[in-house]
Image 1: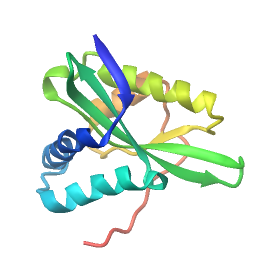
Image 2: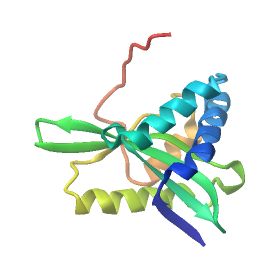
Image 3: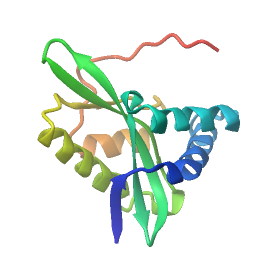
Length: 149
């Protein structure tokens, strides 16, 4: 049975590990563990930065995601962004993310959140198909960024 819950600080080592793995898998990028650890801890220390959710199987964390907030003046409420989504390889394509997405969507409806958004690496077609299967669309916006190296 898969349990979806809000993460607690003791989940931080798993979340850090997932982020290090995801960066390597998706962008062939080696992150600095100490910086990622500080970044994850910052979320637990300041809820205005976001909130983590995890999926557990038999008491073991097998997936995590971060929800961050975007204020929409058009809607006078928040939009939630999915970030840092990671599912342990052995649990991919088994419905874990679908279950996490459904949990977050239910919370969003209860809390009067305007909508859910995410971005995905352009070559990650498996993830894109997953998001489309959940009813998400990429029709409205293109994503641009400037990132300090």
